[in-house]
Length: 249
Ligand SMILES: NC(=O)c1ccc[n+]([C@@H]2O[C@H](COP(=O)([O-])OP(=O)(O)OC[C@H]3O[C@@H](n4cnc5c(N)ncnc54)[C@H](O)[C@@H]3O)[C@@H](O)[C@H]2O)c1
Image (cartoon, rainbow, N blue to C red; front, side, top):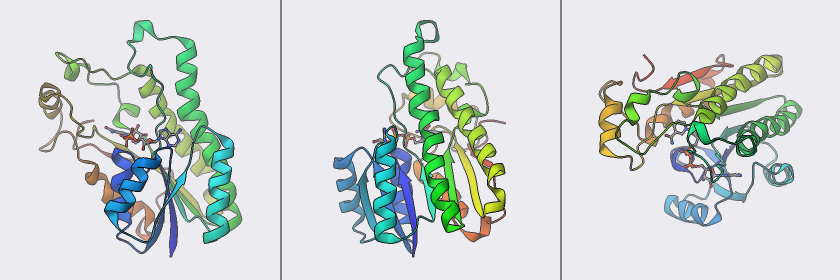
């Protein structure tokens, strides 16, 4: 049975991956800070193959300990899907009021953590001589925001989010190229916005730029993840798969 770690497995997107992949012949390891949500999620799924590890992607020790525990008991980690998204309290501060201290924190939480997490999991993949790493970027990482969608709402799309998400695509391509001879694949998906109680006005504006769906449900991403985990995608490496109902066209 293959072993799949899902960081941020309690979140909006991560929990959908956990639910969908728990129906397959896989061991799923939720690596997340939120113990309460993890317990509820595991209970609601009722699967014997879903496990929780209290995990903080911003702490090197926590990453090491989690991987060590999984390897000790389950021998290998076949894939890791990185959905954890640590946010600082200032997320959403308007561009004109952004401060260096806060920006450094955001870049550390998201990009430094992703690089260190990759370094540690790739060490394990290299020993195993195989591995599959999947990152989450966003449409905001491939294109500037459609600012007109936010008119008349108190929502915004922060500049640092665009920078972070472009960074994730760069990390994907850099690491995939570096490790392509080592039977390690590294890909990324870039979802469009996910429905999560946004104001009606925003949803209506957003729909103007897409096909029939508009904002997506988390479940709309599940088949892409199953595909990237499967051998059907064995020659797909270093790619960013955009799932956005045509938003970016
Ligand atoms: N929600 C969207 O509309 C959307 C769209 C495109 C891309 N994305 C991307 O998808 C990914 C997941 O987004 P989401 O909406 O599911 O986020 P979310 O906030 O719903 O979930 C994030 C999860 O990460 C966990 N987490 C936070 N800090 C952590 C830490 N330090 N260590 C470990 N776990 C931690 C949280 O407990 C939570 O379970 C992000 O990278 C995000 O940028 C989201």
